[in-house]
Length: 124
Ligand SMILES: [Zn+2]
Image (cartoon, rainbow, N blue to C red):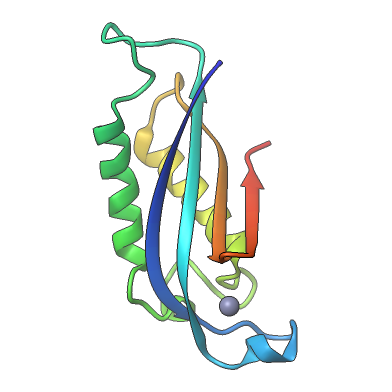
């Protein structure tokens, strides 16, 4: 298997209920997102997917999150709040459908909400 990783960033606000009291207040993070895609077969250029193409897909997803109040976005709801866990899950699902290739699997997305805390969604 070959695995590629790209890193992207977005800044946004969110509000989480019923976690630590501190999180109940509206606040923001500069999220750092690590995205891994993997596959067995390289194309004729010797790459799994062109980094430029991968980054373009990722940028489009980041643009939908950047400078937003995440709780207000259509993809998040009370039963799917914009925690770092769900953000990682959402990005993984969203990118997989954008890439739309059976040869390239999104394997892991890690959402760093600070330098010291992150959540990873590993695609089963
Ligand atoms: Zn937070």
